Image (cartoon, rainbow over all chains, first blue to last red; front, top):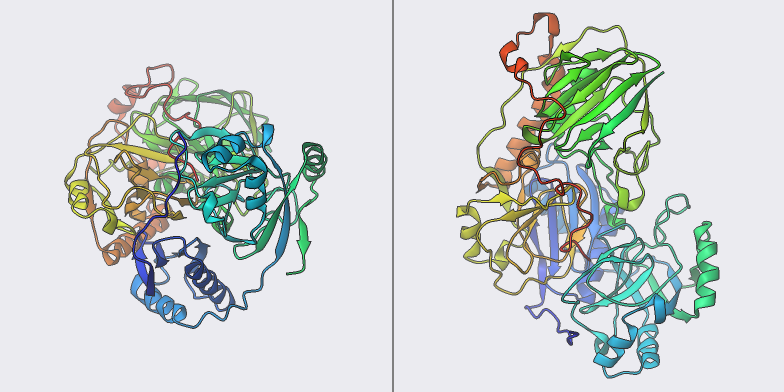
Amino acid sequence: MLQKGSQTGMAAEFLPPRILPSGDAAITVEFSRRIDDDANRRVLALDRRLKAAPIAGITETVPTYRSLLVHYDPLQIDFDSLASRLIALAAQPVTDAIASKHWRIPVAYGGEHGIDLDDVAKTLNLTPDALIARHTAPVYRVAMIGFTPGWSYLSGLDPALELSRRQEPRLRTPPGTISIGGVQTGIQCIAGPSGWHLLGRTPVRTYQLQRDPVFLLEPGDTLNLYAIDAKTFAEMDRAAEHGEIVAELAAS
Amino acid sequence: MSRLIVTNIGPATSVQDAGRFGAQRYGLTPSGAMDRLALATANALAGNPQFTAAIELGPFGATFTAQDGPIRIAVAGASRGIKIDDRVLPLNQSATLMPGERLVLGAAREGVFSYLAIEGGIQGEAAFGSLSVNARAGLGSPVPRPLQSGDHLDVRAASERTEHALPVLPLSPDPIRVVLGPQDDEFGDAVKTFLDGTWTISATSDRMGYRLEGPVIRHQHGHNIVSDGTVNGSIQVPGNGQPIVLMPDRGTTGGYPKIATVIGADFGRFAQMPPGRPFRFQAVSVAEARRAAITFAALLHDLPARMADVAHFEFNVAALQNANVAGSAVNAVDARTWQSELQQDQQP
């Protein structure tokens, strides 16, 4: 059964952010409880500040929709010292001048490439073409990459397309899947389990081991999706298999 | 150069080292050894740096054969019967396989994972600084998948050094220590249920996650949160209220609230918990967890200094004679365990 989604509705943002322990070797810096564009900008801004001026003891950072996970070595720095430095950095104003790339990503919608497209359109009271038009309209931002390599979660989904995840997740969904889950839409790179609704597939590999760069998208990058037909998908997929990027890099 | 031939092997056995860090921001799973103390112990005995890539053996038995030259090995972690041809080899003791000799490992008896370290490590090509197998991402070397019968590993010929031993430490029955959070505020009174409860690990567990069975943990605000970052030991609670502890092959982000996190010093001990054995959690402060991390790091660092030459090491001969070697039943472990593909609850 498909159900119309609703946004997780807790009180909004945290200023200053909440500093939450994730065990003894990571801190979650949480800016909001929900998907929030402003919170995501703050996450990315803090991430870039830490990249520009590294704090000794931080081993890596993982930006997500509304929080930054900061992994650290507890032998090098303690929680309280790191927490106070993170709070100070997070208090700086977001300048918004986050350098990022803008991509155009081809998608073959529907049919064998997007087996849920017709059902989703029906549930949302749209024609499949209208659904595709609404899904390709926004400029999306890569809010986070996670779960499996290259799985890129996008912010900017048209609220009319929000849809709760499936009751029964599928154990294997194809590489390159473009799907909707709740208020989120995303680009999946490698085959894997998913409870999201499958709208289409892109030939673009956001992760490809033998290619430079191995990871195509960076959190904070923006992108447009555009529809291609199955024949174009097959051609691009072959090229991508041989290491071509096939996504277009546009001037931002 | 010598070669170690995989003569016979069960599921869930793969090459692992410290893991692959630095690209979790791109969704790259860290992988790496389930029990770092056991990995470091086997490596110390084989004369290697502590997190050199070794063979991580799941609960089943395995047989290896040396070829072309001598190979120095040591096995640590879960206890199991070990024989070189007809000679019994104790756990935590190095030995040298001569060409043609077979190393026969039984099923795990106490714990789940053992580490077979090889002097000089395993020849392979590192990706993101690691040989660890992550089959889904196509990573791992020399093969990007669990080992199979017929595989062979290129290794260094054994040096002339003497054999070494370390005492076998019994697994502590103490509670598994956790730091509450990051989303313990989603659970209210259920945090007490979690800490007061007696838990067991379900047989449908693997290197991605251990499913817990015990009291139902209720969410106050529903079980869907916005996906955020995970760590080894994150205890996430899906809609059915039965927690899943995320292990090294975890997704780098997850969309269920996380009630607590297993501390680093107890993570390996937790990973060795056999399915069905009751245990409890205990909440500690971040400061206490850090002190435990410092003690744990010192323990790993001191392993080489604590080793004794085998000629001066006393061990319990009677216990060895009762050793349970390959071919014996895999007790308390379902054959489907440790080879599940991906779990339904692991999804974006």
